[in-house]
Length: 262
Image 1 (cartoon, helix red, strand yellow):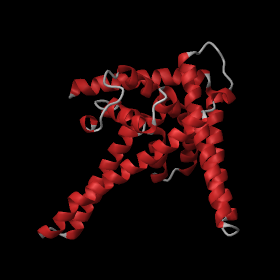
Image 2 (cartoon, rainbow, N blue to C red):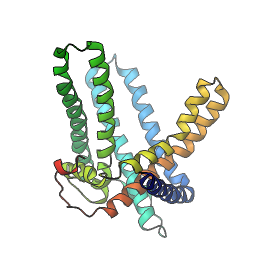
Image 3 (cartoon, helix red, strand yellow):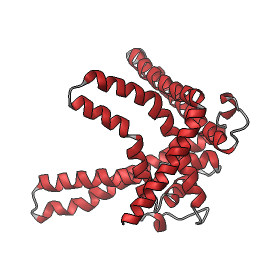
């Protein structure tokens, strides 16, 4: 177990070092795409607030437009990072990294599968916990245990299948295959991915700690630095991590789900 944790730590270090090198060299272009995503999300919230009492139909249309725009920028960011990893010598314009219509459609369908997987796991936990209601165990205990197990199960499921956008952009995978490939390639890499998320989330954890200690000014500074550094770095690090685990994957290109759950 100790050796496995050491190997996982070294793997995370390799990912972070490569991600930092790419981010530092191309910071402004990567940060620009991240900022566009932030502006799109913020504009969507403001638009929904201002037109919610005007027309529900218009509100729905605007939500769809902003969601599509946000996803388009997000996929464009991934494609741009892939270019930087594969061909750092030649420059590319951001507009040239826009995803194709097919990639956007596949991503949207895969997102529905993604949500379905999360809801499915939640439903399984409820079904498993339901019989315990009739065993005489205190209902609040059953409820608390079910909620705790459900949260853990949902988090693990989310982590295992969250790499699906990369397979659509990088491998041209179909929506369902992208979910299956994410599940297959993350098998045995859960600890590494979890450690990577802990490292990337370190800035936010420090921010929460400083808020808890009631140091608002320092917390604000840390939050600003985190927003301008950690967010672009996270996007690159996750893309680098995907490329690493997918390159080490030796399984079937059309894996089944059951053999890759655990």
